[in-house]
Image (tube, rainbow, N blue to C red; front, side, top):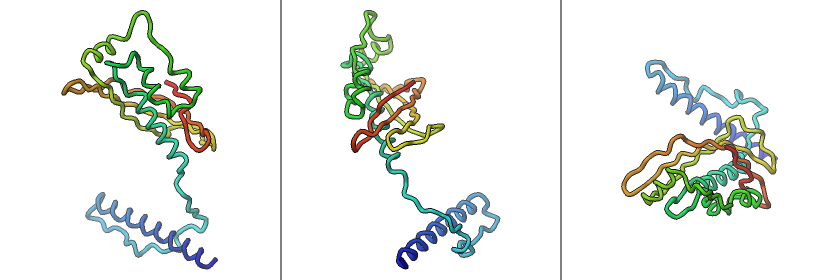
Length: 190
């Protein structure tokens, strides 16, 4: 018990020292003429007794990484060989639930054919690369089985030696569900 208390005290002191160092460093940058408080002026008695040291939310991070990886594949396109954007969902199958894959991996061709931009990319042998950022701005609370995030997808079309940013960026809400020991994308909403 005594060793555990000692470990907690040492961790609290380390956190306090880090925060003090961060504060002092920031003060030095913001106002070089004013003297910053000394790190030695902060004592362990100033740390609230009810401070709880918790581990980072690794489940949420794992789900966010799955979302980032899966959406990167979903929004990376090869117009010269793909019939439509839905072909990317087939490549992203390992990141999707069966329900989402069944809904999205469909033959989306129409009699009119692909869009003008898609056809132009195909003629240029371009590939469209996705860069995905996953955030939680206004997200519902995470549960053990469901996590929702918002993702911004920035795409770049690369043809020969030229690149072009695809505008506008795409923003989607993504729902991830826990299936067994891993997270999978269950829904993507525009």
